[in-house]
Amino acid sequence: MSEPRLGDIIDDFCIKCKRLTNHQVVSMLGPEPAKVRCRTCYSDHDYRHEQAPPPKVDPRKAALFNAVLEKMPPPPEVPALDIPAIDLPAVEIPAVEVPAKAKRKAKA
Image 1 (cartoon, rainbow, N blue to C red):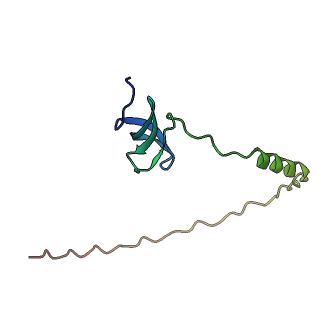
Image 2 (cartoon, one colour):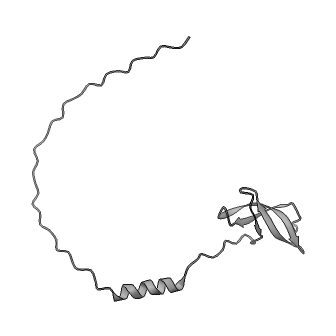
Image 3 (cartoon, rainbow, N blue to C red):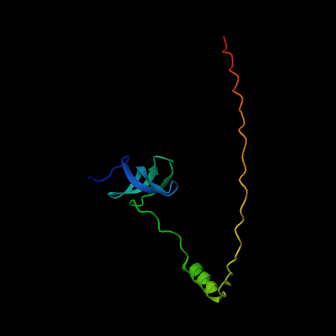
């Protein structure tokens, strides 16, 4: 593939759409695109080389959550309930007739 030029259409990860879409090169810094414009939502952003940003994971939150879980006592065991089965009598449902819809008259 040849080097991209100003105005060329290239693929890049859009930060607003949060997916890989077509972008137009709007500024160059040497031989590489510096800024691109999404052709779906028209937002301008830095060229990301088709890479999605890393997910925002805070390791401190995970460590704190695990520490709290370790301090919790285990949940109590729930005893199994022995409920006798109930025999219900069969119920007969009567048939109901649904009236037919009245046809509309056609407009003249």
